Length: 224
Length: 312
Image (cartoon, rainbow over all chains, first blue to last red; front, top):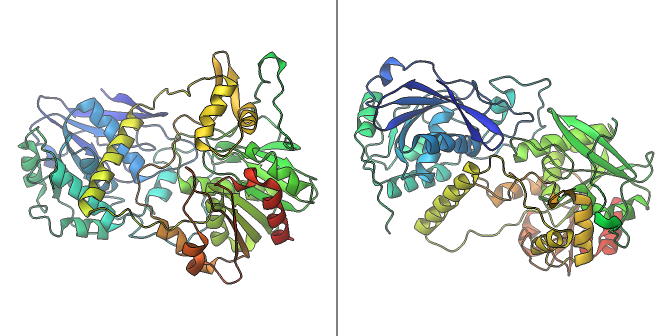
């Protein structure tokens, strides 16, 4: 049964797709999408329970008035789900992949492997901000997917060095041999930089699920 | 629009908190932006030429109660507003720079369809800089008070230390987000709230801070609380870097006066005449005063004089 979690003034819908024991897999959808209702065939191999989160402004989660989305707020959405599930592996599609990377770096002890897959919103708004432009407004009561989420998160700036910092945090502090597994074929600059110089990052989805499923729960700290 | 802004009750025991030169706005109204209600305040004759005045982060429009009347008395219709989540504007589930710029445009459009002049302090200056660059045809001249971007170099630490610091900051920010649900601001006495504000405004005198409480906080049965959304915090996590704000400054499209404070304090942005020199557009002018970040509060007469000269 779907659970409603609270993130500040927003209710987030967390959908249990499959029960079971062991470490959960948290699935994060792409921009403008919503959580699936059933386990996709290519995720059946996951050994434990599977949950899927609707980000703010998406699916069954609150659609707030006035916009104001950032990728970091979606990271905090996912972190609220993580606090509910305990240690989990995270699989993200599109913008969910970027969020999975941020969360793996910010919570290296709790994210036991992040799998980054293709999907809407993977690229974001490029490496640097575009010149200032006229702000856009959407009239009427917003419904999911929130048009402001589409507007703001599709122009969300993603500098490669910023992504690399979160990669380094995940690599350094998770204690995992392969904390980030990239199944995406699309390679926006932030993701291309992430894959370069990270042996073992590229994987098929089946391989990524197997690696994360076997990852130990304990994290080691950074050193030097 | 009718004025439906919630009102602060008077301080207890009939005490009237006053401050020399402070004057309440002549009119208030509300503007709807993307479903949020924004509180707007005006000083001066309604038929006078409009001047848009934007406050800084964690402030509110009534912090201009001394400065704005000086501009209004010189013949301007001064229009300011509480940013979303601040003062009497609606609290929002989400906050971002882009959303604040959108709200700024809504206030501009509710004020005039003709080009106008603008003055911004700190974050309010940044919002206006952004909007002026996007819509130069809507603006005539601009004054930035302690709001031009600083260009502080990255701290002199190793890459490893830098990344570790980012990790700690991100983790702390997420911890805070986890605990935000249902949060309310801590109540205090009027004087207690004024003293707490003094930590952010160390150069402000206590009587001014008491006045700010009387117009920017509400009096609940258990004490005074700032109206600002308790989920709002300065800073946060994100990829933004100061150099981005400087990038388009050399092409700034309207005459620009920057007023800087020489005295560093907690809210200062780190901009100096030296580090801005190579980024200023032709014709821009900088004035550096012996004040802190809240130049218009410390020296309202001087800042108003400089502003009025530039806008004339």
